[in-house]
Amino acid sequence: MVTTAAAPGLFATLAGLERRYAELDHLMADPEIATDRVRSVELGRERAEIEEVVGVYRELRATEAAIAETEAMASDPELGELAVDELTSLRAKHDDLLDRIKVLLVPKDPNDDKNVIVEIRAGTGGDEAALFASDLFRMYTRYAERHR
Image (tube, rainbow, N blue to C red; front, side, top):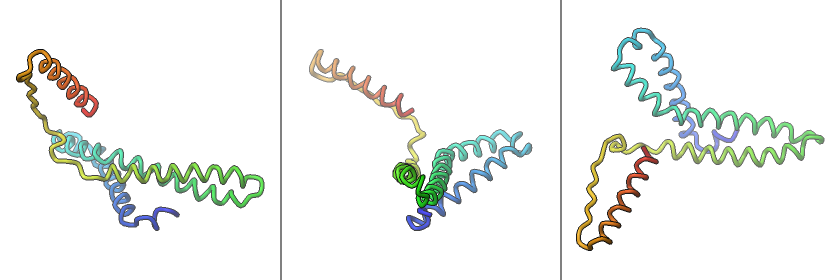
């Protein structure tokens, strides 16, 4: 298997996140917690934060299983050439998923969920300054919309 040799600490963390995700699912199904709105919202937020990481981790494990299965088929004379082609694409997918997980595990900035107020003024420069301020406002607005 590719994962244990690559970064055992990373995969231990991912396995812990997957266990926590399953635990959150179980807790959210509990009728006692479902009636407690504050606790339910807290658990829902925590679950939403790790949902994408867990999904990519599960996809990574499925890809590793497919790699192992395809490697076994590579020794077959009839399927060997197809298996080698499949292995190439699966290994590339595996590497992409690993990179994606590493990005997803970067800690979030505590200010990400906070609002911001930006003031844009035209300043001196007449019409050109007003046009620039308008363009700058549209640029920041579009950026904010894309990044929620």
